[in-house]
Amino acid sequence: MSPRRPHLNTEASRGLRGCFVAAALFVTTASTASATTDPLYASGFEMFPPASLSVHYPAGAHFISARGNGGGLSPTQGLKFSRAGNTFTLVLEVSAATQWKPLLDDATYAIGPDYPLAPGEHVEIWPHFTTVHGQVETLIASFHSAVLGNTRPIYAYLPPTYLENTDATFPVVYMHDGQNLWASLPQVATSPTTWEVDTAFDAAAASGAFKEAIVIGIPSNADRIYEYTPTTDPKFPSGGGADLYLQMVAQELKPAVNSMLRTRNDVSSTLMAGSSLGGLVTVYAGRTKPTLFGRIAALSPSSWWNSEVIVSDVLTTPAAPNRPLLVYVDSGDTNDGVIETNALAAAYATVGYDSGVDLLHVVQPGGQHNETYWAQRFPGAMQFLLGPRD
Image (cartoon, rainbow, N blue to C red):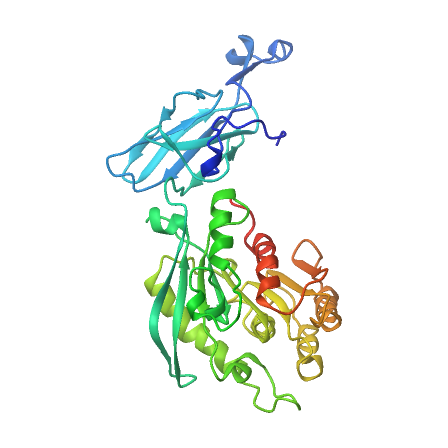
C-alpha cells in the first residue's frame, strides 16, 4: 500500500480519521489498446475488477454511507450503501490500493482508523460510531466450580463495539488474577495498582492498535499457588493443581462464557494471559491445551518454579497443530526472573518458534515484578497476539 495521506476528517478529539481513495475508475492505456480486440481496450481504457464493501450494523432508521476521493466517492458527501436488514453493501471500481471510511447518516464517522481497500477486494466490517468506552461488569457473581470445589466472581470487559454493534462477535482473552486487571474497578484489586486492561482496550478501539476483544477476568483466591502451578516445588509443597484449574476454565467457565456473550469460539480467537504464577499456568495451558487456547501471553512468568520444570515441558512441544499458534513471553530486567524467562523463550525457539513471527520475547529495561510494569507491556502483548484492527 502506498504511504498514508492526510485524513479527510480532522476530528482529533474523537480520534477519527478520514478516508481517501488513491485512484480513479479507469486508467488510459492507449499503448495496450493495439494489442487486444477488447472494446474497452480499443476505446483506450482499462477496467479494474470491482471491489465491494459490506458493513454490518444495527442502524434502525439510520443509513450508512462511505466517503473518499475517487472511485465514485466524494470527500464531502457520502455515497449511500444499499441495505438488506443490518447488512449494507456498496460496489466500487478502484485502480490501486485505497482507503475509505463509513459514516452513520453521512454525518458521524466510524471510530478508528481508515479501512484499506484493494482492487477486486471484498471488505467486511462491524464498526462502531458513537461508543468510546467499553464496560467492565461482574459477569457471574458466584461462579461455582464442581471440579475445584470453590466459588469466585467472574469479571468481563466488553469492548465499545460489543456494546454498540449487536451484530459483532469477538475473540476472548482469559486472564488470571482477574481482580487486579481493571482501572475501573480498583476497589476489587488486591494490588496497589492494576493492569489497566480496560483502558488499554479502549485506547486500541480508537486507534486500531489491536483488535477489540472480550476479556474474562478469573480472580485468584487462597488456593492461588495450588491452582496456578503444574507440580509441587520443594519450597512450596502446596502446588500442583494446574490441571484441575485449567479443566475448570475449559470445561466449566468457557462454555458458560460462550452461552452468555457473543464470542468467537475457534482456537485462533481464544487467548490466555497472566503474570507471575499466572504466567506459569498460561504457558502450561499452551503446552497441555493448545487446541483450545491458541494464543498465549506470559508476562513475568514464574519460570523458576520447581527447577524450571516449565522450560522442560516446553522443550517437549510437538509439531503443529498441537502447539499454540502465537506465544508472547516477557520479563523486566530487575528482580524479575529474567534469566529463567530467557531460558523459557530459548526453549520455544528450540522447538521451532520463529522470533517476530509466532514468538515475541520482550525484556523491559528497568521492569520489575508488579502490575505497574505489566500494564506498560500488556498493550504490546495484545498487539502481537490479536494483531491490528483490519
